[in-house]
Image (cartoon, rainbow, N blue to C red; front, side, top):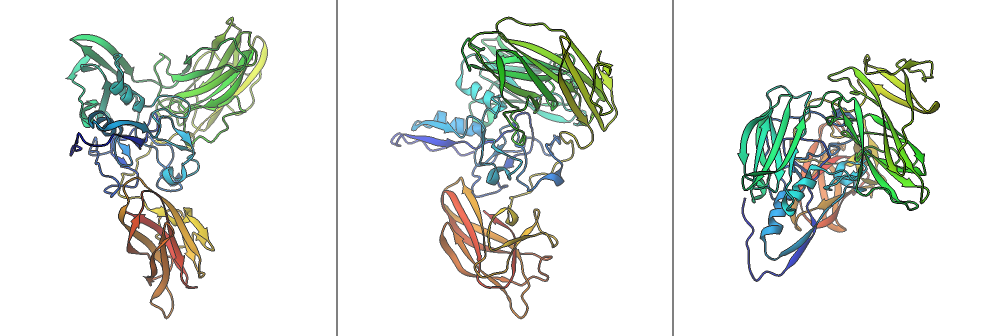
Length: 558
């Protein structure tokens, strides 16, 4: 890749919006993803695929369930990008003398901007942060740690639990580290040492490791001595939860707040990275549930109000606040655990864990009763004494009794339509068109009656002055582009229909003939129009010049 030119006389500058690499915590793809496909005039820097064929198939929804093609999760390998990887952005900031600093867009995920970026509801958040909505660290967090901190660290990605990956499939294992040298072990056998590089594509150490269940250990060295170590292991089915506090503990003050992390684990305490079971919370003492979260960009449950939340890739967050300046506060978390689709195991466990947040710790007697037939459990139901087997399409309910008091009812469904999916995924086949049915319409209508259209439908412009418009974000420089309009029309005794094209309030073409297709609504053509787009926000508007019906399916800008 071409290096940036360095001129000692360059004026000092800062980056105010760097860099759009998107990640969903716990989600991985080895094929590079670009915001609107590749090649694209806005995607200046190519990121090589990590494997020739996609390794991972685990996904958030069936392909047919997406409302449009943008509704995808983004990979945590730093290979899902708008224009540039986080690693290259770091290299530029470090090596260009006039580059005084940058503001990463963003440090945290945030609610909003989910429409044009991620395809809209149920996507609710912008996923550009190094930390997710629930204050859980993504792999990006550790990339930055490896480049900007001095305390020795190593971090391994991805996790090492891959029930649907074929045995012996080579998986890229990355290690971020700020040590001089890193050694990777698989089942205690060394796979060799590597030195973290300074070039953007060498900041991570990479080993291609054939998938087998087992243990990965990364060891960081300085001056030949071990200074940091990280171990991850293949997990069995989810069986337990682990509670811990992130950040400061609760203080003796009113309304103080603490962050409780709920980690899904197997029976040995190993992190289970696909955990998505619902945890129920009960506060004992001078505290209350302030809010619940899990970091998911597509979980649209309320943050405030309920006392339960599903896990997202193995983690759940509870924010607990004090209702008095003094007094003990203890939190009980309860969960029915198992694989939602029974992928590798049909075992179900029920776990209750208590954590002391302030003052004296309590140790109540906790009894658990459960049913597997959908009935609400009572103290006459089966007593939980250990994991049990279920059939697919089973609803498990549990009653939690604390010191003889019926305290909480739990519920968890297991079935083919529950939870994450494990199907083959589509490759990134090219640029993504902006769908007409999701655009802003004036005197226009959405139609589903037709054939061979893209997306969920198309738009009919049948009145003079009817229009359709799209918001288009340009992350590159202002300049020339090509607008492709996919349309269908069949006007009797005429050669076609006429439209006007306006870009950001400027008329680009006063009159464009959309020539007849063989059949209106079944056959589609494209017309290409040179346009100029500005940097940042742009609006693309198509307006009908007559009462002849023209159908618009999508536009594409490159």
